[in-house]
Amino acid sequence: MADLSAMDIYQELPQTDCGDCNFPTCMAFAMQLASKQVSLDECPHVTEEAEEALSASSAPPMRIVTVGNGNSEVEVGGETVQFRHEEKFYRPPGIGITVRDGRDRDRLNERVERVNQLQFERVGEEIGVDMITVENSQLPPSEFGELVAEVNDISELPLIILSSDPESIEHALKEVSDGRPLIGKANGENWRKMAELSEKYECPLTVAGEGLEELADLTERISETGVEEMILAPDCESLPNYLQTLTEIRRLAVKEKYSPLGYPVMASTVSDDLFQLVADGTNHVLKFASILTLDTVKKWQILPILTVRQHIYIDPQVQNSVEAKLYEVGDPGPDSPVLFTTNFQLTYYSLEGEVEDGGFSAYITVMDTDGLGVLNSYADDRLSGEGIAETIREQGAMDLVNHDKIIIPGLVAMLRISIQEEGDWEVLVGPEDAASLPRFLRKEWEE
Image (cartoon, rainbow, N blue to C red; front, top):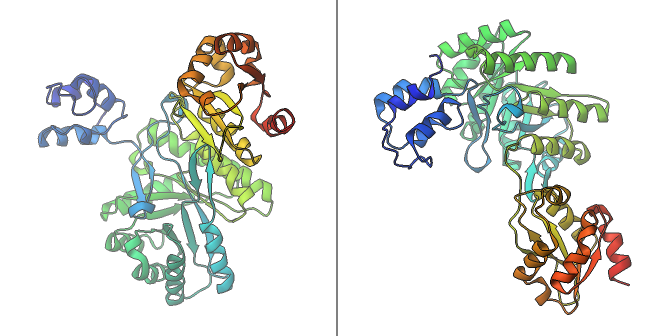
């Protein structure tokens, strides 16, 4: 069905302007639905007839696929644009670590344990690896099934189970199908049996092909069997080949709305060059993998890729901020320093991290600047000596210490005098960047 205009959609809605969809009017909701920024089920009063008429139009051009279940499930796909600045990207790619069945069992179990530990905290958010890919290359079907069960016992992460042999996949599914793993790879030779397994065990299916024509042909055949959730896995030999192929798939899916390729895409990264592996993984996150499998458990390789994912999959139209209030880092007391900053998320967590890592305890008073950083807030006239003094006074930081010193960022050193006049405190000008703060505190505070 062709896309409907906002007016076409509005005609099918209740037109009561009840606000139960969290929009003030039905027309406002229709406009959001037309741009595919909301889903139809957010209107609790839509009729069955209207739902049937609108559901196809409101569906995203790329299908949403869920791997795993419960608290550990990973939802990928559902993207509506090719480039982030057009709107935003909705579902971060799932990142999985590969485990091959050719490894010694003790080493394999150790690798899975290390995968479990690939979780980090960055700017107040928990980020980490999402899945484990178990790849069949040597073990016979029954032993491979036992191995998959063992991996599943060690880790709570969703599984990707890969084998060209449907019998091996079925042995594995008999052990772990309740976890709703992603299975595959279906290809031109085994697709019918793989589709049967996907349908029988209600698991999403990976479809592999050498080119876009083969992939599209396979997805059409498989969808006719009743399988709806598929992940495309194009055979690519190099990073340039991956970039070209994944870009073409994304364009055909979201721009041309070519349904045989309207599925999430999986890419894999294997390289003997440790730095190239990081570069390749980063490229796949940017363009346009929905699932990325990596052959490493090294934290220094994983964290940069997770960091890129974290930055790309945020709404570029919304400032990332923390609550404007007084924060305590460590176990501050009456002799602890008091620092001032804005409520831009990265600014605050960078400051908090440096204070904590430097072994200090401190109070941090945070001003509401609508999520702008220190320098941008000053340039936008959101920071003034009067405003900063008022924030410090309202949050009560100076009531908790037995000194009258407040540390401000070096980027707004020009406000020192006006803050002193407004607050009657001694204002110290700190460094311009958070990384220099521990050295500043050791020199200017502890001495």
